[in-house]
Image (cartoon, rainbow, N blue to C red; front, side, top):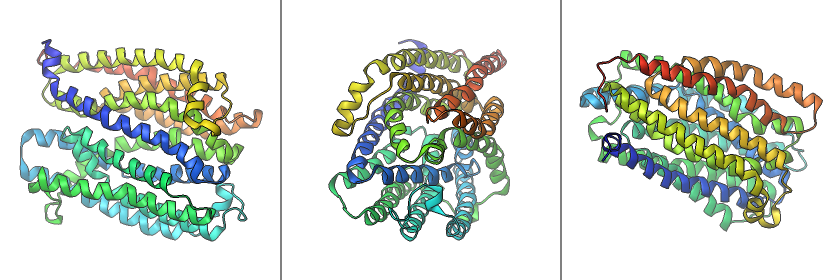
Amino acid sequence: MPEWLHSSKALIKSIAGTIGVKGLSLLISLFTTAAYMHYFSSVEVLGVWLALVSMLNWIMNFDLGIGNGLRNKLVNILNLKDGRLVKQCISSAYIILGGVSLTVFIVGNLVLGFVNWNGLLKISPNTLSSTVLLLVVRITFSGVILQFFLRLIISVLYAMQKPAIANLITLISHSLILVFVCLFRIDDTEKSMIVLSAMQAFTVNIPLIIATLWVFIKYLPYAIPSVKYYQGELAKSILNLGCCFLGIQLSLLIINSTNDFLITNLFGPEHVVEYQIYDKIFILISSGFSLVTVPVWSAVTKAYVENRRKWIQKTYRILLVIAVLISVVSMILPLIYQKLVNIWLNDKAIQISILNAYMFAIYNVILTFNYASTSIANGLGQLKIQIWCNTIAAIVKIPFVIILAGYTDNWMCVVCVNIIIMLPCVILQPIVNTKYLKKMGEHCHDV
């Protein structure tokens, strides 16, 4: 057996498990979009729901980077096999995030009532009353905040090198909401929105609660979070690393998560559904590749702690080869995209523009290579390029889109802007990765 394969058996198992579980989750997400189109009698209301969920999910990025900070920090501490230190690290993270969650929940509920949601989401009060829409927002917001706190268990699972279990949680959540949307149909538009928002909150949080209990009972009974084990220095260390990740998260939030919002406000909520139809199939490809890179991140951190430079270099080369193959598939996909959409949506299918499909394909290629390079950089803790490139991209995105929207009445300008602003990071990050790995030192193990 080749040395790389021999030393990567655990990683390969993690990748296989992650692809199986998360891949199924992505497919279920695809079917859910089609089910939504039958659940809602109005495309406009569906567009509002998709934009609202996307917008409120932005909150998941405002955890001060605690999740990713804990993920990288805990890999090192678990490697030391110090049970007390593990408990201190986990307790510190949970207490900080608990305080943040409570603050956001209280402040958020005070602010929500002052927002004109009908105006923000471009939906007439005659279609969806302001009272009902505010109730839907409050229910969804409360579910997101609870998820915000409970998702810390995902970072613990990644640090434990158990990404497949982490992704199983998402699979269960997506499956539950799909079953509900397929089995239940409420003719009253307002009632259907209220019930769906409650089910959304329920289905994303119950699996997280069960997973949290299971992990701490079965795997980490010695590390159940406790206020007594809070350590200021550990908390500071997690926050310092987390703040770097937070900067990247917030930038990517603006880059990737404002598309629905911008399309709704500049072109109308009905175009969000059209955008989603293009995006859902293409995102399966880049997201499928991200399934490979997710366990690589923590594995690279572990290899870095153990000074296994050549293993990291070999892993990086393999990721780039896979990225090239995926890019070829992405560029072929537009040729058969209409047929895929016809099969997927049947009588709800739209007419596909091959030019639009190729723009999504190009963006998909950029995302794929970005995942390959940043997974290595994240594992090494080398975040400067991502911080600078993504910050600049986030600053220019919205003004750039607004300017282009003034010259064209086509929502595709949002995708075009994404392509342009993501290119610098895709070009520069591989250069930095290569230079850093060369400087790691000759004392590293040749595995």
